[in-house]
Amino acid sequence: MGQVTILQIKEVYYPILAAVSIPANLMTIVILSRGNCGLSKCISVYMVAMATADLLVMIVNVIVYHILIYHFPLSFLSHTPVCKFILYMTIVTLDLSVWFTVSFTFDRFIALCCQKFKTNYCTERTAATVTTTVAVLIFLKDIPSLFAIEPQEIINKVQWGCRSRVAFFSSPPGAAYVWFHVISLVCLPFTLIALFNSLTIRRILVASRARRGLRGHSSENRCDPEMENRRKSIILLFTISGSFLLLWLTALVSFLATGLLNTNYYRGDRTNPGFIAIETGAMLKHLSSCPNTCIYAATQRKFREELKKLLKSPWTLILRLVRTRTTN
Image (cartoon, rainbow, N blue to C red):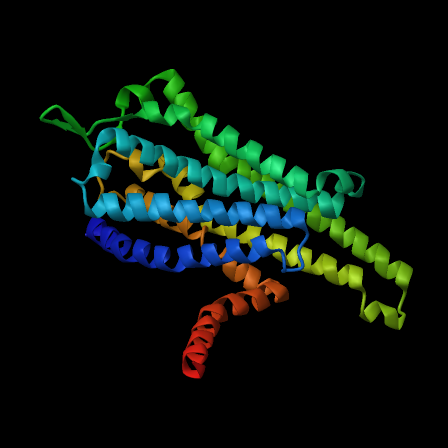
């Protein structure tokens, strides 16, 4: 019964998630690329990188793997070489989404807490270098996952499907890679984001108290541009990193309880509560690729204005065409 329920939820959940998240991330990329949101170019680079990674997660992990391969098991996508590449990309895209979030959190930590390094580090060029380097390292890091997969069956000398290779996971190098992958994908990002946020909070509280003490109780204290900008940066940082921590928490707990991170490599009883926990964690961690657009719209006034313009632009174009035809 548990298996049927979780599979029924997946069949409804993933199409809805893709239908909402793909347009949202596309609009985010377009709006941030225009540079009219009042954000620094450095922040915009990280935000575009995160939105691009989230878009790739929706396309590769959700549409291709969880929808197309799941519903069409004998299609071209189920040929073992193609399936291997898709599984490799599902790991890469999640890694990109996670580490771009860590990079953004670290950048905001430097900007708010390390004034000596802010001028040199918090620049558009540095942000582009960091995101490019992170992407290259992730593509290289996840190559061993290709050796963890074998054909599920061979029909007329054609390899079909993908399943975990037992010999790989039972070998010392395979076990070491699994732990390295888990630490780099969940444990280390969790730790770093929590650490940077806690240090940022501590630094901001100390700086705010000192600033209030210097300004005293003057009327100027009611409208402090620096404190207002700092407040907006804090809200943006904590909402993005906080949503990531909450939505990935189930995946982390299920791994600690079962020793497995991904249902792609699960070969046990699919009615087991452990499998259901892994599936639930997978659904929530994919959901983490969706809320950033809502966060930007809720916390950034200029982003909301640009979003309204983007949503109105097709209708504005249609009205112009209609008026042109009527006048002619």
